[in-house]
Image 1 (cartoon, rainbow, N blue to C red):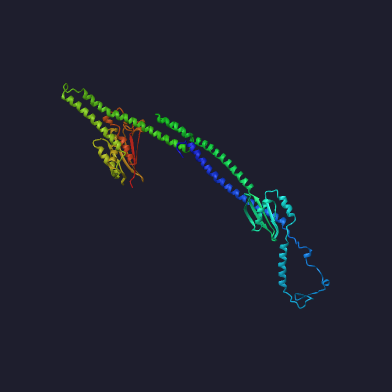
Image 2 (cartoon, rainbow, N blue to C red):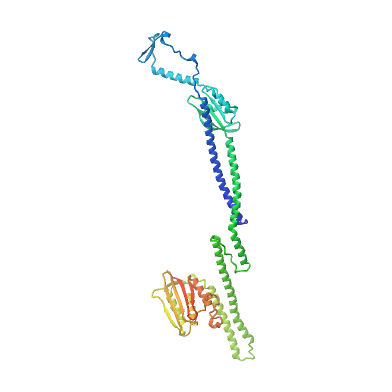
Length: 507
């Protein structure tokens, strides 16, 4: 379906299509069942009419008359006598005649009686009156006796006459272009009755049912369209609200949110997810703005200093020592700017560690190596607590050492002479934990949430030479996350700081 249409209309159209399919299936099933029921009723009615007519007409009577009946006389009247001899009879007139077998005589007499009976069957006199009464109905009737003439209820019933000599049962026939359900019934005496019930009434019932189904389907479709449209409108109303609010974000209001939307359904969960995404985007946007501002400031400062000294420098008026001091200062500022650029490039590449540099390393060895690099002339109390067994991790050796060196350097910078710095390595079934703790000045509480942001310094008023550019902890975070680990900081002012690193344990 075209995406140019609004969702509510697409939803309504889909619902209507499904409803139409269901209505067609159900309506077709109802029509088929109704047609079968009507056919059964028509056959039953036709059979009933035929049997009713048969019950009226099939009255077998012996109509041979008295002249055809044998005389009942006694032997005295005929002057003859009969005698029974071993089951055989003979007459006094011909004693020498051959007497036929009794079984053969009885068989011949039985056949003669049956033939005489079928030949003598006549329709009941009330049949004509019955057919006259039924001639006003739509049902066609015809009846006949064996070797007799057929009687019909009306002229159209002539079409039933050929059926009287056929087999019994029901069938569909056509009379003057109209369809009838015909039934033929026959009794033991051979009387046959046929009836035909018109299918026009049944067709009218089917037509009426079809019209009713069409009307109901039309109303159902209209109702479905209306309800589907209203349901879609109600369901999509939160999306309309979300769209308007999202447009405010696009218009330059990053603090705007698409939620909250009442409920706990999918749209409410989507709203919460979008708001969380917008929150992170706003934080990232704010961090990007701070980064651009801080980077611009950090890069502009050494350039401004170097330029200022070089602009006021007049070699012809000043001695060589002053000129050299100005040149050295400008060179130092440019070198610091170069280091800053290198740190920025390192930070950009920290999240992309080549796979070939990843190797199995013992975290205890990393901790000891980092301490050896920083300890030097630092007059601090160093404590290294490592497990007796290996603490394997999978990572870039140089990157992980740089992380620990950076943390240890910060600890030295913020710990007084004679202070304590402790490095601990612990293992668990699935991770390796490294901790760097000191008892120095600590970290201000309001600075902790932003400690790993770029260009964040513990003391903004500190000289850049002492405090650096504020990129060290951001680089540590990028390296640790590139290894699938986490790094956190905890501190209270005046009670030192603790940095905890968790890395996945190598298998």
